[in-house]
Length: 213
Image (cartoon, rainbow, N blue to C red; front, top):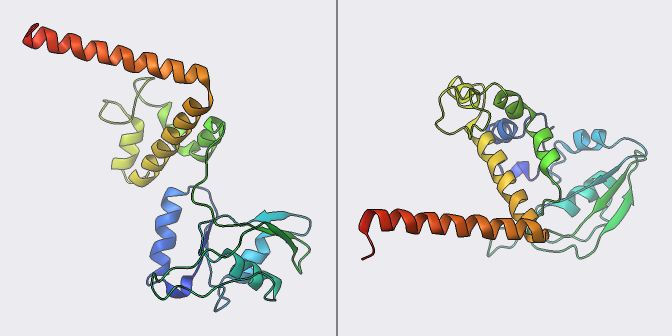
């Protein structure tokens, strides 16, 4: 994971630590394509014969980074907007470039969002530390909220697991579930049945509490 425009950051070290706390096992590099700080470290990650892809929102500095890695201004870039104080959308197509090291790098247009496809296995792998804790919970269906004997919450209380990391896992799991429902007709039917059952249960509770009136 790359944190670009480090020359604009106040406390860069603190930001790197914050990202590492939620990106377990992921290499986090800070760089400035303007000053050159950190660019060599990025270049060393792309070995000869390997292909790297830069992904990120518009104005994140992807094309500027590619130019810094190439050692020439091949990709078109724009200055930061004086009005918005943000980078501007410039790249409109994908372009593959050969680096001096022999590696390849693919520049891409800015993305508003990235979707998750068949992500269950990937989420388990990315959050293997939480998965390992979860098998130690007292209840097999533990939601890691307030259940007694929850190993995940115990790790958070002990300072061994960041709360933000658990939140990140839950967010990705929700996004993966929404994608599955949107793409799978059977999953959509199951979701509708679930909401119908919940609606009936809610009506039954209201009737039991207040009567027919």
